[in-house]
Amino acid sequence: MENSVMGLTPYLTVSDAKAATEFYKNALGAKEIRSHMAPDGKRYMHVHLDIRGSALMFADDFPEYNGGKSRTPQGLGGSPVILHLQVEDGQQTWDRAIAAGATATMPFMEQFWGDLYGQFTDPFGHQWSIGQSVKKPTEAEIQEGAKAAFKA
Image 1 (cartoon, rainbow, N blue to C red):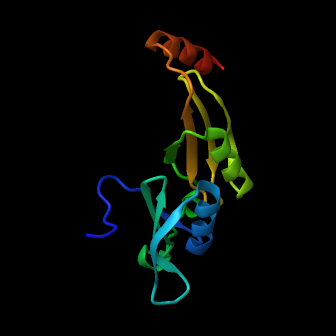
Image 2: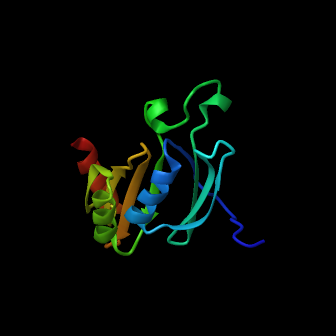
């Protein structure tokens, strides 16, 4: 089947799927695979993007089918999930996301586990992390780094 997706795929609920599509294209270089409008002609019932060979899917919020409750991170008071993107061009990816409207929540910098790494929240309340491997520390070095980081 053409454009079929195998494996685990994040499927998000967003407050504005049209704007989210543009944000992910601008911030992360996403390519739109397909999208389908809902019968109301105002909201998207499905958007499928490709981000560096991985699928991301999402839809607008439809609280009327959830007992009147929103399923967006804003409606839920946040999200415990972080979507991680491992890349070869970390600083460039980070800068692009921030320039497109993401809010940094953890600075992009070298971490004790050997990655350049940072976290941001997108304009729709979803948390993301960007990582780029730059070193291969030993397990002992990672444990020592963790002890120092968790003291702070």
